Length: 61
Image (cartoon, rainbow, N blue to C red; front, side, top):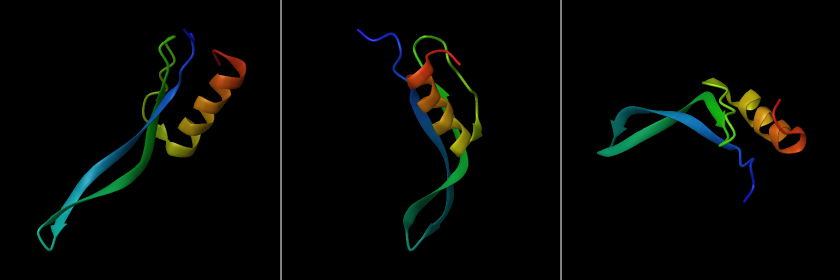
């Protein structure tokens, strides 16, 4: 079993409905986490993706 398995969760928010359909949009923020303890908190999405990728390559940042 791998010790590092980073995950990036993108934040979305609900917007007013259109034509009876629920609508959502990305906020531009995300969080990178890993079972080993990495947790970036909500940061700009590009930074969260970068942190997840760096974590795979180098281990704990």
